Length: 43
Length: 138
Image 1 (cartoon, rainbow over the protein chains, first blue to last red):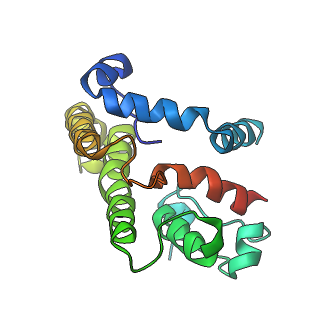
Image 2: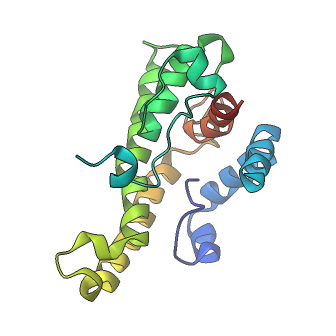
């Protein structure tokens, strides 16, 4: 959510804020996140 | 008088028939941060947030409100720029440019605090929506 809505250049943002990119990846890997995103896509 | 949904169509809410609403008795809530904080309090054994009253909980509240009042505000301003001026679309491009800049600056503030989460115990506020969504939709 944090950076996911950022309307600018996501690649440039990841380079500028590498810890944020790492954080997003950690969250993306969590089973609860995957389930919630799947539920959201299905609804 | 307009309803909350009319004022803010994108606002999160607790569906009245959801497990979250049944468990907490709060059926007509809105404001994402309030909903999520309420759910963490209503389910203290679910380990959704630090123990209330602790320093970690204070930090949790800090980031929850920061997300709600700053990051989310900048996101809304960038997506609905025409709403932020009496001249509507005529000023939208400038408003959006400022909003994107503000958004990045706020992410920078969070970036400084990440290690790799904003809460040392590994329960960042950003993970709560995933858990809470399960409570809300289940």
